[in-house]
Length: 421
Image (cartoon, rainbow, N blue to C red):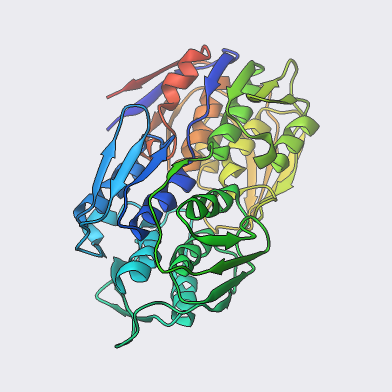
């Protein structure tokens, strides 16, 4: 099992490019199943979750070619097996995104229920309720969601869908299903993340009629057939935010090429309040810090609020900042598992339910630590970059699920970091 060995104390300086967004690439790979014509997706990151999704698509009978330049060409004309089996998707909850496209195009789909998630429950009941409103018959048997259209019905029906909670993957599933449905679908209370906007842009390039994606009300008018298209995946705002925190924490100066400041307003506002300089540029974002930062309190919430996927990374920054901070996690119930590992490195953190209070330490000390989930991994890397001595981060397969060659990018910026077996 791979580990990361980090020798801390070096400011990050230089320039790197932000990769395509994992959370946009995964639904867009599934959206390619909506047509029997080839779809070309550019700027796809090489991540474990992407590899799993491509393996799933190929298992269904589609062709998927991944070029060295990050381009994937998907041809699902010969797709004949509309099923996502458990053994192929047990490590990736995004497999539920295959449900809407397969049901819309083939009138049936069998998708394994997602397995357990370390950071908390991610119920799929919202997906099921929404697709049922569109006319699907869905049963759960032997750990699978089995969906089909009623006898004699050829297409899903447009519907007015308002979810009980904001769900990103649910919104994406409804958008993809509605693109081929009969009539108009209105999504009330949808997710508004940039990845939703990007998916809507891709669907429109394929001939769909999607309006309002990225706002609080999405309207989709179904069409009978979608065509092939070429689409470039949006830059990963969470990877960008992670590097923003890492640079600020180490007192560095870095240009993040392709970074989108307009997708990171809440994170950038906090970094500036902490004392970092963040400058949006035409080609990306420049971030720098030349003094000890001031700890900042925040509360995670849906976009455009502070993202739960940035909570752990900003906590790592707060651990070595001046003063105390109060961090409230409102999205997932188990997303403070990195706290005990940060405390092994000398961080001072008190946790009470959904609230964590950090007390800024002058320094952290390197230690052996263990990653518990994707973003927790990133927080431990940031802590290792600023700590005295050596930090060994175990279980970095979590990191590989969402960050493309993170250690290589950090080395380019001057970090002393290496992957060890």
